[in-house]
Image 1 (cartoon, helix red, strand yellow):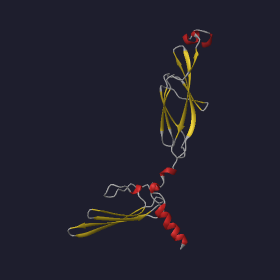
Image 2 (spheres, helix red, strand yellow):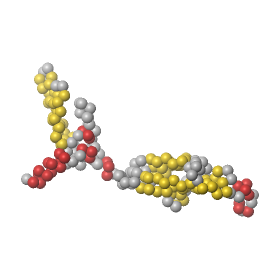
Image 3 (cartoon, helix red, strand yellow):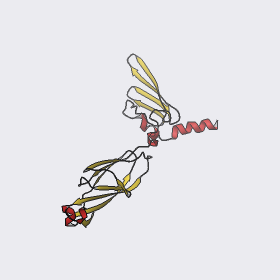
Length: 190
């Protein structure tokens, strides 16, 4: 008996944020925002709903019409048995959109050179567990005039999110390039 009481209590008390279905009741409230026992009376309609995370939600709606009451019953799957159950447990990649002013500028991700080219680049992480932040350092190395600019950006990646990074040289360390290396006719180009 204690086990049954505990299971019933859990199905009524656990937060409805775990629910994945998006059924909307007649008054505009989604079942994903509601949990446990609900009795709603609005106009000539009464809705009785019981359910939770463990057990499916049983809904009974009684509508008063001129021909007499009309009763509608249906059942929604529990959050544990829904086809979209607990999407917050699924891993998803993060996306990094990078703007760098030099077509052949270099990008380093946590010290590793990335084999990418172009002024706009899209990077994708491996699937990340949700609910956690993953810090990383992105370094852009690019030429601007007669200087080589080195700029670092610290990022926080989260599963399923996109981060945009622009390297503009505003916080870069500038290293002068030799004029003969820039022109391509000196000893540095051989």
